[in-house]
Image 1 (spheres, rainbow, N blue to C red):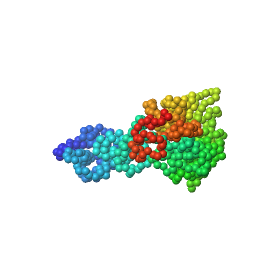
Image 2 (image 1 turned 60 degrees about the vertical axis):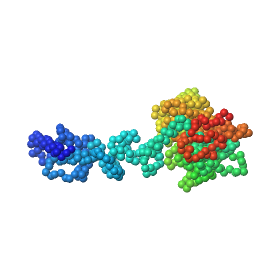
Image 3 (image 1 turned 90 degrees about the horizontal axis):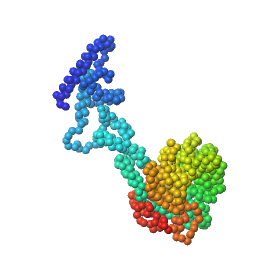
Image 4 (image 1 turned 180 degrees about the vertical axis):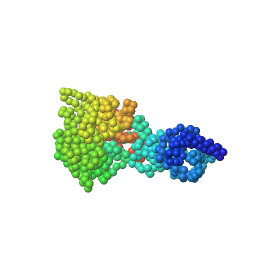
Amino acid sequence: MDDHSLDEFRRRWQEELAQAQAQRKRRRPEAAERRPRRPEVVPGRGEQASGYLALAQGLLEGAGRPPAARAARQDAASRSRSPPAREGAGGGEQLVDQLIRDLVSGRRLLPRPGPAPAPGPDPRNEMDDVPFFDIQLPYELAINIFQYLDRKDLGRCAQVSKTWKVIAEDEVLWYRLCQQEGHLPESSISDYSCWKLILQECRAKEHMLRTNWKNRKGAVSELEHIPDAVLCDVHSHDGVVIAGYTSGDVRVWDTRTWDYIAPFLESEYEEDEPGMQPYVSFVRINSSLAVAAYEDGFLNIWDLRTGKYPIHRFEHDARIQALALSQEDATVATASAFDVVMLCPNEEGYWQIAAEFEVQKLVDYLEIVPDTGRYPVAVATAGDLVYLLKAEDSARTLHYVYGQPVTCLDVSSNQAAFGVKSLGWVYEGNKILVYSLEAERCLSKLGNALGDFTCVNLRDSPPNLMVSGNMDRRVRIHDLRTDKITLSLSAHQLGVSAVQMDDWKIVSGGEEGLVSVWDYRMNQKLWEVHSRHPVRHLSFNSHSLITANVPYERVVRSADLDGFSTHRRHRGLVHAYEFAVDQLAFQSALPICRSSCVTTAGYNYDLALAFPYDSI
């Protein structure tokens, strides 16, 4: 716009403002005389404005914006960027001058054709105000607005203008997206320089892992067995596996790095009595502790960070029927005869009895409730009784129906789920009951099956969902909001023995030794692997899977056979599957703690080819 056009624009605007003011004075001369004299103002929103006056009023006021903040920002901008208005000019002339100055300054912000400017400093350090349509916002306020957008919306906003592109690619926004999607939860914003690239890499890795899961591409390892011993129990936590044998040996593997400080956990039995150690009844492990219970009532606790010798040893008068270990802290619960004992270290590190309870029947299942704070809480089932055990209180009966024994148990931070077998004259069908641990009342009664519920997984399931296995060969997904079964899969011929699910798949194990992987969104089986013994333990995360086939019998038969075939037929198996093949291949070679048999070298192969000895 040249100078002649600006002068013509100013002249026409002043004439229209003068006509409007004169018309107002003619309409209300008496009211103007009675009232004290005020400075003239432009017509408000309630009056009918038209032409250049309406355009100026709308642009300067900014419809739909907070008036106080808008006025403050306009006054500050006019004082900082323009000289004071002429004293002789009226309100209309000040309005025209202000609009013209804004138009001229806005014209300077527009890109001009020509060669690209030389690279300068980061525009985020020099940019104070961000244009949002017809107003200017501080950069920090713009970031607060953009934080409510997802990655797709941020990508669209980055295409609006250069200024919006700088905001949409701010590290704070992409770091927050990484945290919301669960990538690198323990990292800080200063650990990486480009969080947008980090999010892309994490999503590409997640897609690769999901593809490997679906196509069963990965590495499989058969953990080395103890000679002349039968597998008794297996447990795992975050890739660390613990196994107990009939020889009394307890062994630990770290499948994340295949390099562990204490592959064998020693007990305190005399070494001059080989073969006299009692069987291992139960084993449990978390991030720092390993626990093993023996047939003679002894309990050993190891600290995985200090060494392979036990740090505490506890003795019961009778055999231990159930064992539980907290996944978050150092709390151990055991059940022997009619007593339940909770053990935990004090402030000085010495182990002591935190609570002791007496129950009416022998305990079948025992679980520690996570995230309970200072005082540990456990849930125990004994026949048809379900107890809530709080360290600062006595044993309380959570559920009791005569003649309806409990067949499985699992707990979360605020709920407990257990299967109930229906007996008697009035048959109601076998169900799963979900109780609130805070209110101590029943929330849901799920299912109506003919077979017994053998396993239930509440802790590892997605929110408002729960998966269960039954002796009627079916795996069921329960919706806790509607108390209905959302999906039922015919999985295993001899019944389901272990099950776990995440946001898109189910992994189930059966009494016949079959491990099946399902995509429950498509209601489709992806693949399966078979071994001889029942699947007693099953645990997986995004990139690995641990399975354990534990035999019914604990007697070694056909000892004259070679070690591998005897182990495969009668002693049980522990398998570790790794689906992040690209990382595993560069970290280490085949570990020495895998099976001693000669297997096909390589990593990228179907897991169905990893068992060449099934026909032995």
